[in-house]
Amino acid sequence: MTTLTIITDISAGIEKCFDLARSIDVLLNSMSKSKERAIAGRLIGLCEAGDTITWEALHFGMKQKLTSEITKMNRPVFFEDSMMKGAFKSMRHEHHFREMNGKTIMTDVFIYETPFGIFGKFFNLLILKNYMKNLIEQRNQTIKTLAEKMD
Image 1 (spheres, rainbow, N blue to C red):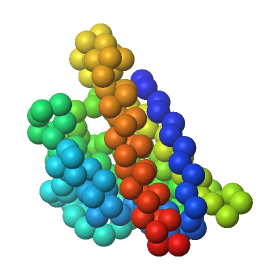
Image 2: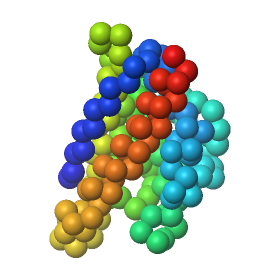
Image 3: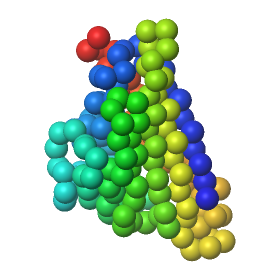
Image 4: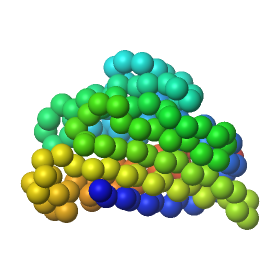
């Protein structure tokens, strides 16, 4: 099991940051390099508790599909999405928000497990862990840029 924790300071209000983080449109915008798109479930707008979304994207030269569910939500401080079906053995993404000194501190906790035993662990150490960290940081930079422009 791998846990990535990524902290992003945003000079904008917590409500705005929370809504941008759960926006399908913002996620699609931030993942344009991987040609990510929502193909089933909620396709546009803001995710709500109980929503499912099936994503399709190009990663490592292969088309990947992942279906996730918004399993928990406590607006505007927390939401969680969990993989229902996809390439990981398991995956859970916690999104935490707190206000501090006029800023929002957005903390992503991304927990996943790779399939394929020792080969999956080796791939994770060599490539996947850094790849996932970069994807989340890319998404967070988009959220930060949009939120700070709107404030």
